[in-house]
Length: 372
Image (cartoon, rainbow, N blue to C red; front, top):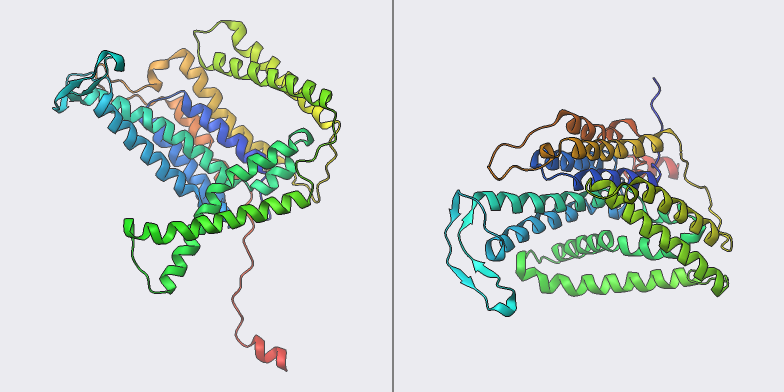
């Protein structure tokens, strides 16, 4: 079996994989499944991320997820609904006035409620980690080249927005190295004032350079008629609304049948029609477009499998996807959901390796050979 040459997987394929994994995670509060999904995302990022600045931003999303879990626990201790029987932390209780909707601050904290709050925070943290994995694996500049013509201008704004975190991480790393070269080794809160101003200045300078470069290339200039833009926007907006309603209906089994798959299909068709109408008056060209072949289809399929399997499991046996807190018990481990999440890890082994930058190591004796 021949080994495939290193090449970058299409960025849209990574986003499809990450969104599928995020949809699968959104249906569960089982901590075993959530931690498995987080491990799968981290494995794929570690195996297939490139050497670009945004590829090193995944850990920032992990820290953000950890902060979300901590904040969720703190809010539960302060103003959360205290349920359970196993007392963990006895605290005094203060009732707020009626204008504050009768919120009670403090009170005894029970293990059941604490675990429930932790699993809800963990679910949001894993969803953010999935989006961070897509941001680390997909090159935003290449993603902009692959967008439909109707989304060219909107895609430019989206790419700029999702590139903020990686560029900020690169600025922080560059400022930190410069401080170490000057002999400044202070860390923690004492180093924040010395790092914040150079990072903000570098970020502002990069933003101005990017805005000037985009303006020189004609971004934001459209020659389409106002009536055509309004029609395209109305059709696309209606399609997106129907798709959102349909997606909610698919995930929630208690909704009517028409709010599920039919609304989702109709919304997708209207959205595609809006993209087609908007792209008729926009002419864009792409130099050396990224290929879409077997690895891309495999990557998207590996993201759709866990989303489909966990949705079906959630409709048939929803108890196995939740954390049992009343009464408190060990969460179940459904084999179908575990196998589906393991399928999402296949792109780490079955996709081509990303190209690495050329080595800058100088070969000993090269100078003498050149002079000779």
